[in-house]
Amino acid sequence: MPHNYRAPDQEAGVPSPDRAIKTSGRINEPHSNAREAGLFYWLSTYSRASLSFAGIVIAGLVVWLAVNSTENLAISQLQQTAQARLALYESTLRAAVDRYRYLPYVVARNHEIVDVVTGNGTVDIANQYLQKVNQRSGAAALYVIDRSGNTVAASNWNTPDSFVGQNYSFRPYFTEAFAGQEGFFYGIGVTTGRSGLFISHPIAKSGEIVGVVAVKLELDELERNWQDGGETVFVSDADGVIMLTSRGDWKYRTIRPLTDQERERILRNRQYSGQELLPLNMDENPSGEDGLLEIGNERFLFDVKPISGSEWNLFYLTPMDYVSERRTSVMLITLIGSGLIILIVLFLRERELKLASQRKSMEFARIQALNTRLEQEITERRKTEAELRGTQDELVQAGKLAALGQMSAAIAHEINQPIAAIRTFCASAKLMLERGKSENLGPNIEQISALTERMGSITGQLKTFSRKSTGVLEPVNIRAALDNVIQLLSSQLHNEGCVLEQSDFAGDLIVHADLVRIEQVFVNIIRNALDAMASIDDKDPKAKKRIIIDLSGTRDQATIRISDTGPGIGEETLGLLFDPFFTTKDPGQGVGLGLSVTYGIVRDFGGSIRAYNRAGGGACFEIQLPLMRGTQK
Image (cartoon, rainbow, N blue to C red; front, side):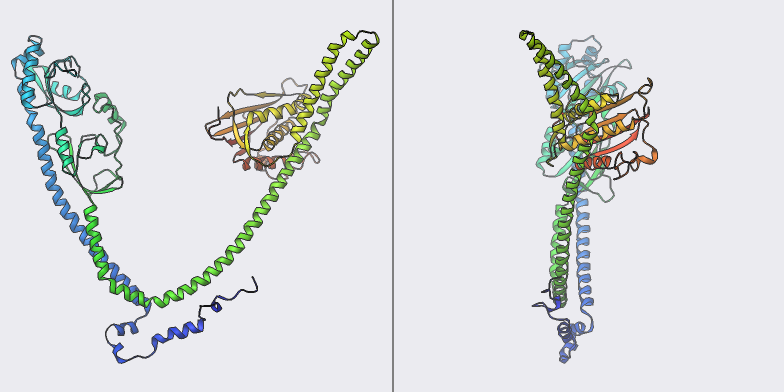
């Protein structure tokens, strides 16, 4: 703690506890007899906490009672209005439908229509008749369908979107009418693409149903009138699909998610072709007893009325803005009315607020001291992490140098072979020069050049592998890193009689990592696999040393599996495999840091590593690393 630190009580502007006690004691000093009456009597009798609590409770209770009573009254008034408006909207809808409901019944009894549907009449006469009747009635279309579902005559026979020749056997209004019932169906026209209500009636001859008469009503004018009215009203069908509404953006939305069976039936009937029938963003299915629902960011008071003679439901929604405005107004009035109580409470709490300010100053000083200590701890932790990172890099470098030491015999063998060959070619060249056959020196020189290139490739691989990590993360191609490691270890693999197999993978796996440390991970695992298979007898034809490398990738993750055909990993060893200084090798063969460093490197790159035994024998190390976005090919 700094030497100039002062206790909070002694800081400038903050009174000492003795002064605070003396000051607060003035409240109980005797006053004039006038304070014994009225409000002052209660102020001197009850504590500040009691008066503050009483004032807040009374004010809150008054506001709560006023707001709730106002809200209930406003909702009751809106519900009465909604019921009246529902009755009005139902009557207008029913009038619009009943105006045309008789047409199919009347037309079905016309002898010309009966003749044409049975194949005995003249189609032109029937078309002219339907056209005249439709013009007088004002319907969208009036047409006749035979028993197979084909339209034989229609009022729009001479228009580009004529119904004549169209087959409507898939429509429910056709099947209902052909079953002897009145058809009643709302949907989008498959010929015109315009929505409407279809009403149908069977055509009978000699007691047998021979066809169907259907009339189409387009209720666009009714919807426009609803929209001009400025109210929120809509009609939904039996599946909950909104088909008529004063809100254009709600049309063909659903009041609940459709089931697969419902969607399949709607598609089969081609009822709402081209519409996604997405559910309206309601908080719940509108059937709650409180009559409230939320659609998006809007709250409504709703009422619903089933339309008799159909499976439709008529909804009337009243925005809760009116209720909110009434509630806000009453709240403001009651708050203003309770202002005197609040002011008294605030006045009584003034001294408590001053004391609280003192406590906050003390708390602030304490927190500031804690923050200072925390910053010091964070700095020390970061320093420790940097030291650990450096130690890990040194371990990686030491592991690489150790690997180079273990591979030195195989590398020396690889270099000695071309050196011996170069000596032979040099001796041959010298002999040719002594015999005067200098023209034959070309092939020898080319062989010597090829052998030096091979030696340069081997020493280049050693130089690349032995370089120290820079610690900078960059895009790294997993396949390229594996190829470098395999090329480096090829001599040791060959000398130990081990076959390395790679699966075919067409794409590139690019991760955000350090190439040097990624290569060290692969070297550690492959060398561990070689050590695990050291006990396999090379002369046994049934026991073969094999290392299998399998690459795979998803959209955002690369998976590398390195398997061997060794004896596998003991169950008691699996849980300790990645612990520092844990090893199953003989003394002097390792210190148990290879897999621990490997685990740390993989975790640093945001990946994971695990080991398990394969079903067919041997162990498998599985590494998963996150792919860089947009780099997989």
